Image (tube, rainbow, N blue to C red):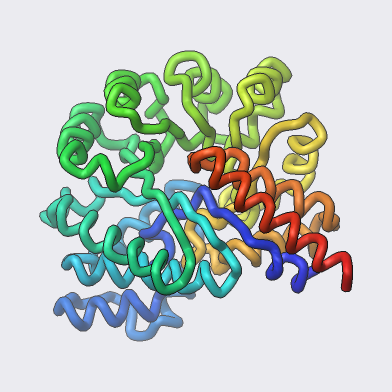
Length: 337
């Protein structure tokens, strides 16, 4: 099964570039930028990854970002992820980034976007990994801050495919950002929002995503299974759900394999993703492998999840068809062996 997973060309639709910042890279950037860390070794950083819910994760996550200061830092951040993606036969990515987490520290938006964009170009040319970038607003900041960030993006719209909403969900519903998301849609951007597992008012948040914001995709979204009308609406609209099994296990102590299987049975377009792989110590293939090892997922189920990711991506239809043909070719080659 590991060989089968590796052989399949894959898309990843839910990975935070800041969440790919490995401990060794944190130390290298801290040294280069003259930043003192409270840890003495990369191993000490990993030992501090004691997450039991979303807030406990975010506290460490945002603190680590302080080492990202210069354009080259953001280039390296994205380039290192794309190298790992290529090694796992990930051929297409729609990665997230959090500009507000950097601009509040005095790092300009241009510095962030230029570094990431350069890595995207190099990844396409040198690694065969293509990507389209999604800008996420931080939901625990104000709607005004989100609007200011979107305004800063307008000169760079050719580098952004969509906008998302992440960070601490408690008391920060989708409705808080309705106006800025409407503006983003008017600019031609796709829309997605996090509806993380077992958060406060999660079913209301899901309903707002569907009925108020009219998202093009939902990030996480496991709790939709609690409401048949939500499931029906998601299926009817053909919306993708970007599920992150190993991340779920950290946040809610459950890989959610049974829930993912239920989604597939209902015709919901669930996809598998890595979320913040440097922190959860699992990139995309390891997430698939965890489903095989711990929830007995079959080749057919893995194949469906892989196909779903290309289907609900924001690629043009011709590109989706071409990628799906590559998946079918890899599946036939695996069957022949």
